[in-house]
Image 1: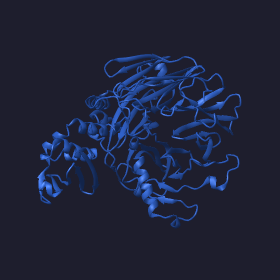
Image 2 (image 1 turned 90 degrees about the horizontal axis):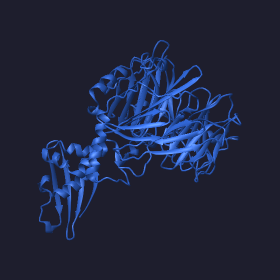
Image 3 (image 1 turned 135 degrees about the vertical axis):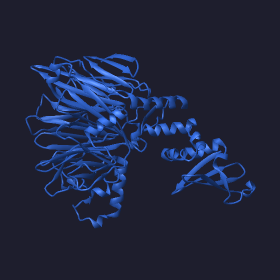
Length: 600
């Protein structure tokens, strides 16, 4: 039997194909009842428009019909009556609902049966909700400069041990993710590493830094994960490294982002500079620099790039097959954005707004796992501030990338190119894109809580803050998607969040914004605390923090400088695993028991 479906507003049509006859059913439902009107060939002897009880359909057929619904519609059906709610306990339907609640999808090479998959998804939800805040009160430190953590992005941790870059992807026992370790010898080149990005699905590591043998230039190397040295270049890379001159005594890389064939590389010397390369053709395809504002960027898809400026977000169209001459750019190389997204209107004319941070990272397919993150749920997160001469407010704004792209298409379709003068991009007001599609949270007690970082992985967003004591960090990890309901947030986490930011559905605490904010995007949140107060010398000498979201957790790095000694500590907070850094040894613990000891 073959079941297919197509949907219109308020109706679901189903065709049931049998060897000798065809029946077409029209399913309608409301809050009180569900009816099926059956239209069939004469041999079925069913009068047109005759209603029948949905629950009298064969169980297998009813499950097939319900499997064609979205998970949110399935949950709505479960509210109609006890009979339908009981049918949602069928393994196939339960598995589909649990995947949606966790923001996951079935991996193409999934290695769990249906029942084992349900059990793993339930464990994953419990790990998310009930894992208590982790406190690393006795950090393990390295008392020499040969061990440090460069800034990193992607799905692997980065550790510099002397002249060796070690990459480690932690395990997740619930998702059946196996730990992996890679080692890259850097001694073949004098490269001071600033940043590295890992895309394990393509076997690519992008490493940027300053060439100490030629300090006036910076390099971004394209390394294969299967290699063992800086000269083990990726076989698909058209060039071994991108090189650019620097225009300051000390230049440093601020960010590298890998999105399919594209590599976005941002660095700062005298200016903030951003270049986008196609690493498989070796071509520079887009570039910009700024003298007046800090550049923040994120890929929306393979052809659209978002760049944050002072009071708006600029959307650029990039051609993956273009070639730009970095030394002799033409006017078309600096094409204007196709549109500008306005930030929320402010309450007074003397107020202004600035973007602080902008992040979005699409999860990659990890291959042989039980289930993986749903890439279509990826969000864009932004920290921005509004200020006047006497006051300042900070805000966290989150919107799904798919929703943002839909808003762009809708607004651009309404405004044809003829309606927009040349070099005058379309300006999309806040009410047309952000007000009804995302979440905006004011950060309360702005002088007591200072955000120190923002990170995104798929539908998960994390913001790190400190309340003046640099030895104590508060991490708030959000999950934004349609079935991530606040009811799954622990009461303690909800109370702590209320002290840090206003997460209400209708926000009226933002005094510098002209209009009230109505948040429509569901979310849940977990609060974690990382404290080093038990070691007074360490706590008093904390100089910097950095953190990155991974597929299943959060890696936090704290750096300390005491005299000539450089010390650092990494704590990895996982939904199903907690890892602490002890010199060159990583100890992995599950929620209830140790699962691995691995030296790197």
